[in-house]
Length: 483
Image 1: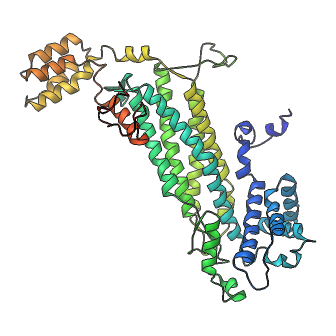
Image 2 (image 1 turned 180 degrees about the vertical axis):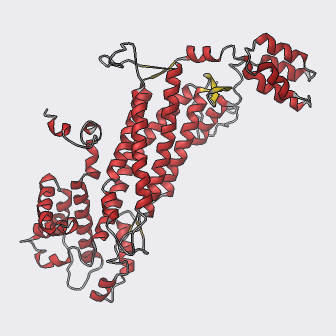
């Protein structure tokens, strides 16, 4: 295999990372944009004939429909090169696609109707619908399946480790214990909320209403046609949401909605990447070793958390692009300027960097091994962590200066089990509360952490971990499945 072309590419997406993301060219390459433009042009042509039945047109038969749709269904690199050749003359990319379609329909039963290709359209009618369809197809076919797969991996890891007590760190300092599983479920909950918002709350809009959004030319050519309804029907048939109020361009607010949602997802994953990196450095996670891999050019022992570092870097790049596009695309001077066009060509880069990061995270997660020994050792003998529950119980019973007394006992000092239990025994509180405090250890002081993981499973799946539908989430008292 000759790697020379990829070694000469400027973008790492087309060079170093090409084997991982080059399949996304079916959505984001220039040839793909040409193919989607051809799709919109041809489907509009068919709509004018068979749906609107415009005077001067005819009913298209099956053989004609197949010939028309084959132009975009069979669109390949050869076709893209031909469009590019035409563009070298026209210096206009959309017009080049129009001419290419007309060229393919010569000497056919449709030759006399060629002027209905790109009928009453401005270039942005074709472009906005093409970009909208590209984003929709990528999200449905690639983005959501990958993201939900990542969420499932995090969920499984969280559920499997729901009872692994772990010391928290707030401000980087030792803090109230949690469980490893609960911390992972926190991430799952954040991601699922954003994914549901992205899938259900955001939608991709499109328009086909002419040069400044008023159907001016349409109405002059065919004054009796309900062009507003026609545009609604056509855009809806494409699986998009019609936008009836636009200038020459669809204002891209909906794209900004999508990009902002993806940015929030990426930010959550960036947060996760940094936390996992830190837990690896603390020894909470080991990393599976792959034969032949090198961690350091000089330190043979190293196994670096490179997958999480790569994810962090690519998530940052993705969000920088998504942020700029979200800020820029909804702004256009007067009724139209062309600055959005060059920015939209980078949608693929933003999504590709995101995709790379998600794959890195999946790879990194698959290599993690929970080091329960290290986690337990870090928590063992951290008796100062019980200062919180002791002083809260003291407060409950009105003991003055509860916080201050525990502060004097623990802050900046090595605290032992003996010292803690001596204090508890000295407290003038009910025996039941005293006994409960005496039974506390750094390992079992985790509150509802484990239960919260179980309840999250019930809330999301509607079944308990044994698969019994309708099982109560508060302790599973009603079934035998959980034992």
